[in-house]
Image (cartoon, one colour):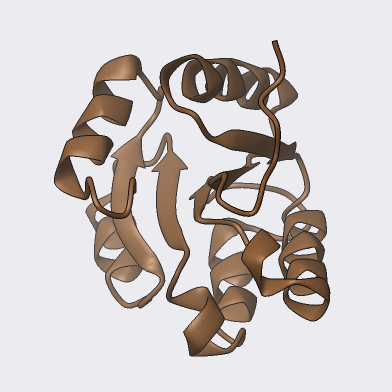
Length: 142
């Protein structure tokens, strides 16, 4: 059963170059939350989607982005550099969660330099991690 998209439906973007990871994460999220999920294997395309939403209708701007760091073409850091150029009034309504296989303390520290990043999560995404995120910020729904 597909979730209907309305102005009040929360939107999540998955940005990971591995289509299987996106498929699994999309299933985990859609089975455990009421959110609609759109997956991208190319960070440039995800960034274009954000910019298009901004230009057309800010209510369609994603509420959350699960972002991998290590990707070809445009990595997660490059995505964040461009994402943070989006006007704060819109960008601040979107939680960016780094979902990555990296456990490098330098990556964790670097993630704290981006105002858009609200959490650093190690792969794999699990139901428990989704529940933890919901409990941290129930008003925002992560």
